[in-house]
Length: 295
Image (cartoon, rainbow, N blue to C red; front, side, top):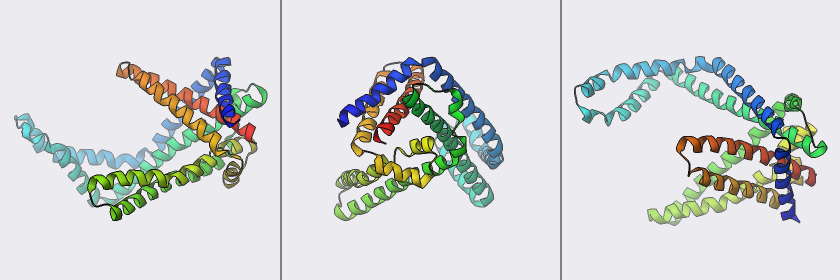
């Protein structure tokens, strides 16, 4: 029964995508345009934080002029020292210019947040469209933008979800190192023990991540808040169905990656990007199928 539900979810996603290819192509192009435009505007707004990066490059360039002259004179033996010298000069510059360091950190965090927000906005729009296709067999492009009022609810829920993921994995990794260090003295045994401990200790984390996975559908469908959507997802999600679905798409990804590796590098990268985008689509629609069946 559970296995059949996963198969039906995958079938629904494939059938839906193949029935309306032009619609999904339009939505994809619009989402890419919106994402690129938002990224361009965002980068312009946060670009002042990266001014110290330009100053740092000038400082390194001037400081390494002697190395460059030596290489021009045929002293190729200095070439391997350039990366290390550049790193040391960067650390020295940032140490003596703390505000530049802070500015770069803020700029980097702002850039990562911008990318995260663009991804979340796109994912939320596709989620709403996927639910519409399950309910009515159709949707419209305007539905891609219909979830703007609940975007920050989704963003907050996504931050909590990712916090559980990364903090959980980091804590598990550190705990694995601690246990392995007290258990084994030989480096080879210790490395193997860290890997084994990490796998076993990560099981509870992935259990909760799978149980919380449907939170985006509750927000897109019922306008729930962040905490309520996570709680509702935990209550209705079936661990086995979501796990099987995720495993199935992961296998698809591995098989496609293996197949595309047979092509030239440039072609394989383009095919890989397109296939990942399609798998993302299919995963969202399969999730919508599970969401409706489980709720």
